[in-house]
Image (cartoon, rainbow, N blue to C red):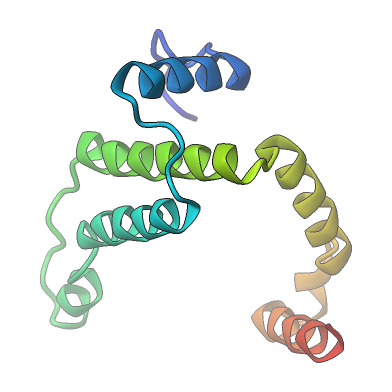
Length: 133
């Protein structure tokens, strides 16, 4: 369960308004979508840095250092900010896109798909889907 903050009750629409106002005040509007897409990937890379050597440490029998949830949450926020800006510039309704994508995934992977073969079934469905699309 996520911990609540004073901001966690903000609606998505309210968040859009705050982001738009923030960008207008700084003249950060009308950004090129390709630059925003690059920024999303750069922020993803910064998020991945927090986990960069974890598998190696586990494989060596070493302890993984504690993660700073605050630092990780800032990277997640950076990704979301750039994603929202990208959607704004591309005229993508992110809530509508998410809803449609979840419907598509639900058809592709029904709730009981893992009962039919676990991860192998996931890979089979994925391979079949790619073959047909």
